[in-house]
Length: 114
Image 1: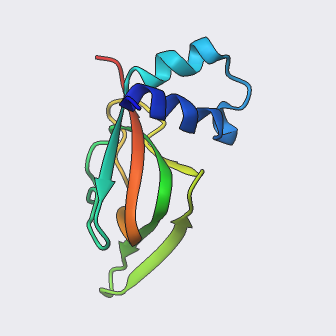
Image 2 (image 1 turned 60 degrees about the horizontal axis):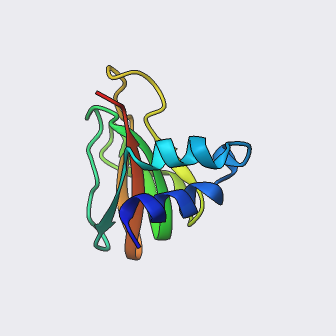
C-alpha cells in the first residue's frame, strides 16, 4: 500500500477528519508521509518549528517537557488513532518533546504545502 493510501485510510479513522470527503482526505494524504520511530526516539525538541499534524498509527507517543528544576513533566500520552502537533502557521513552535514510548510508532504528518 502506498504512503498516500495508508494516510487516507488512517485519516478516515481520525475524528478530526470524520466529516471530510474522500476527495478532501486524498488531498491531505497526498501531502503526507509515513515515518517510524524507535522506542525512546525523540521526534523533535521544544522550540523546533511545528511542521505539521502528526497522527499515531500504532505504538504510543509521549508528550513531555523538562521543568525549570530539571524534572520531566509528561503532558499527554498519544495513543493510536489520536493526533498532535502543529496546527498553526509556519512560525508555530512545538512546546513539548514528543518521543516514541512503546514499541515502534508510526506517524503520518501532513506538512504545510509550500
